[in-house]
Length: 176
Image (cartoon, rainbow, N blue to C red):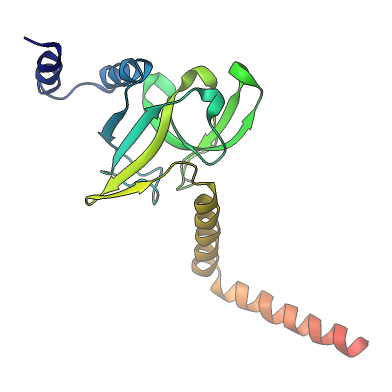
């Protein structure tokens, strides 16, 4: 039996635990290979939705930038793919503040040694989307989500604030 067929047979043996999956991903990425798997969860919605196929390539943590989506080992060894919000430190002592795009969780502190790779692509309904170096799109997404939240939560308050500003502007103009 060849090595490839042995791996294929072991992967078709049935579901594996999240710890086994994390170990398999770590091994493949350390050997320089890329991985593709189905994302589970809603923490990265709308960038990555539950059931999207994501592609991860190995990357040294020192090359991650703000706005990248990193695959890392979280609590209990579970794998997570979240966006890098900020970076502190230098070289192998870098620390990353990471959070999902849905803003449902708090910022996580992730050390360089926990980072496994970079999410470079998502596939949804057969269409691929490049996620690499997506900071400008992320900023636009945040602005859009804030705008939508403002209109959902306080449409009356925002109208009142706008009217108050207009009235204040008229008073200032009249005083001149």
